[in-house]
Length: 67
Image (cartoon, rainbow, N blue to C red; front, side, top):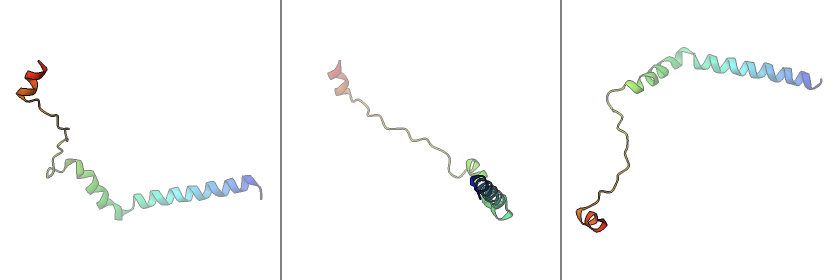
């Protein structure tokens, strides 16, 4: 058994793992979860409000001092 045999075995194991992950991701048990996740951006109950950092407002006294 040389390095090429080990590489071949690793390639086959990686392909089996890939097929397993694809099978798990597309299984019928996951469909409801993916449908709910797909609707999250369209959910109207919680609109997106970007957080704006507060900028301190200058008072009239500060404006007079700087002029």
